[in-house]
Length: 71
Picture 1 (cartoon, rainbow, N blue to C red):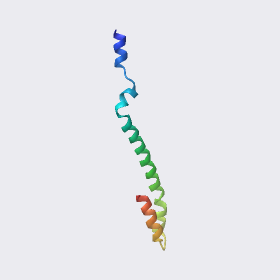
Picture 2 (tube, rainbow, N blue to C red; picture 1 turned 90 degrees about the vertical axis):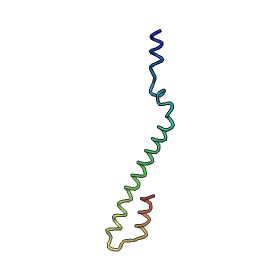
Picture 3 (spheres, one colour; picture 1 turned 180 degrees about the horizontal axis):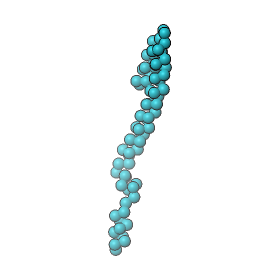
Picture 4 (cartoon, helix red, strand yellow; picture 1 turned 45 degrees about the horizontal axis):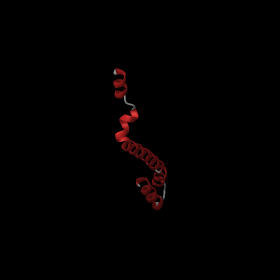
């Protein structure tokens, strides 16, 4: 009888996470999207800095790159 109670009390991690599994998956997807957008913004810093440091900056390229980084 004690062995049956021990088996009932022992829960797997998937059983524990079952009520919030959807929220955990949503959080994982949001974290991945956040990382990708951060990398995209980081890659756009170079063209923005290049235009700002140029003798005659092309404001169209500057505003487009800035808009993409913010977006």
